[in-house]
Length: 355
Image: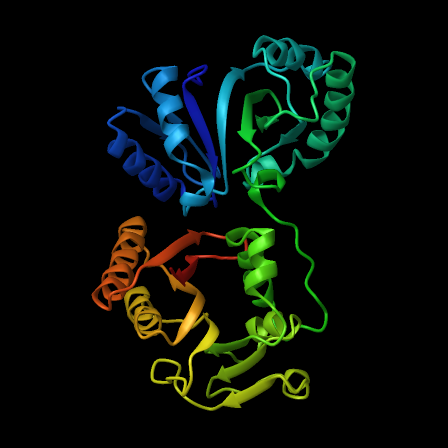
């Protein structure tokens, strides 16, 4: 049973519930709140329960989604409803929504990212339309509200009534951007960088930090999925890889292909961006990324860390500390943002920049 008014709900990649729970527990431990996680493997979500509503308030005031790596969405749970009747689910949901005493800017009915819940997609869509209409009739929608109502269908008979702070929450249902593969891109890995730019950077940051005429290096570039995202923004790219690059990218006039080892290459002049999706042990990649940032070879970096089968959360913490300590030893500081993206698998994607 959900602890009414004293839990948060975090969506995550199925199979990574333990890592998501560890991360929430670590942040909670720093606040000494005494919370605990409830999760089931491959469910695609974690519920973190606090001793009382005040403890949850302290947590949500200190911890927001952009600071978390393994959570796709972070919601405050109001109530759990069991035994939703098939013939009138909305009739049971609405009293619970009214009982929260809250008005919201919008309302989403969604389900976690797991095999069983995906079958509820049609039900979520049909119920969502009816819910919006009912909330309008009862004046429960407010265009100026800072919150969004979320109804999470765990299954066809069970729902969690929750809400998100729109300012920091994901702007996609389930925290999953539905991106279409561009036919001109040379590989599906292009979606990973596209999602990273949409997730880890705000709209105004993308406008300021991804300007035409900027320079970039793509380490381990072939065949060019990540390079393609930069070229489409009119950024010139040095593509470093011993493998072949897509001919269309080479014909763009913005790509210089260097057949070299990404772990050995050093630019002659600093560049604006360095991106890297090389398959290697995470600490080896982190050490190389730290060299780039500490050496001032780039201003911004996006890179992937391929995680081991065990102690994945611990590995992320070690890699982050390695990068931060190396950069600090050079007398610099960085900002670190990381997320396990929808298009990631056993990996996370990191954005780092020199402050």
